[in-house]
Length: 614
Image 1 (cartoon, rainbow, N blue to C red):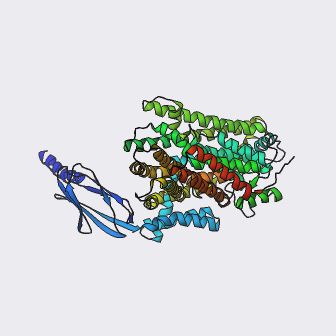
Image 2 (cartoon, helix red, strand yellow):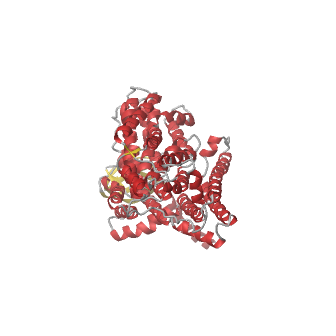
Image 3 (cartoon, rainbow, N blue to C red):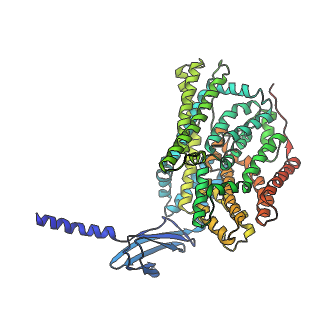
């Protein structure tokens, strides 16, 4: 017995020693010339250590804790890292690639999407190029990892899966509503007031403001609800997609109660605390609202072009095609979704549309209240309306809402004798199928986002901003960087996560105690992130707007970018730069920006005739 115990003890000694040995952790891919972080764990506290790179000493010292983070900047190539502490050694092989390669995946995806008008192929190519870099330039490994690592990983993410299922279920609901005559009934009811193209667009803009609580819900609900109405009024699908997209992220980012509020206030609070700035994060959020020039001006611009009946650029061509020829989409276009028409001999029934849509909205809001309240109470907080919506799980709420909406649509269709159970289920299935292409596009967009994160694409963009920046230019440069990062990665929230830890300390360092400069910098992060989210062809809300409006995705991006660029330039030239240099305050900048947009639309835009189907 003693012999057995001794043998067991001796056998476990190497395992214990191995468990306590130092370990090295570094990013799978480093960028040449860009600082990265090497994490060391398992150090013996109080013992000296040495880190050597390619045989040369890099860092040495005495371990003050078991864990250590070391900044690391390496040239392109393969490098050997060895950490020694007493008799323990840890080794790692690091690979650094030229930093410009980190920009290739989004550039390839965006350029191919615009040139080939095949967004799925463009996204796949972007992911493939990125995988080629991460997999050591092995084309076979790049192809395999594109499928089994990046695509599967994107679809398997819990939040992503929730969005996919929500989109599919909502598609099923829309399929039932359409086939049972609900869409036609809704269109007939609304067009009693929305009697022409201008009023139909105005209704879409107003509905976009009403659905303020979540950008995903906004994109899908507004687009799918208004599409039959704007189709009847000969509003192009490109224009509808723009109206939907322009009132999704901009509205949700400004709303005092929305799914964005927790993220925005959380980032603001964390960085204010780190920078030792004594300011309540929600108060800071409120004080940034006047400096959010881009989203405010975009909402005004949409109303302006609707009321003036003027358009320009590619949108003018699309609108004239729709009004004059009745062609809602470009000949040869491939809409991101394609919903069936109503069954023959089925009369319009507004109840089939209003009940499911109302149920979806109520369950979505109620779900956010339930999940948010539970989260706040679990943390011992006070369940105020702001705290509840800020802590809500919008993914779960939207899932519940789409499931209930589909169920209500089927029950209503049967109860009103619009269709039998079998036909209702067939319509639900067809509606679900119509969303498959858009869901695959979303998966590939998320895959590209994961690759950009692995390749540190944002770090390359951010590293171009130096600390010798003039204070007056801070807001403008931060807006441009945030817009570039958000456009390249397709995520506004990810852009915020990247830039807040960099920009807030920079603003505090450049202008100590200058609250307007700090608020302007924070606002520029949020506004620039929204611009990129609004314009990027790989942004999920941009894709969802195309999907809900049944618009060709590349056509949506092609017609929207000139408008977004115009508003972005005006917000920089008329608002960001002058307020940054203290020429006039934000409350003066916004009306001036609105005036400039009015003059441009008045003298550059061209009239598009109304269509009145009566």
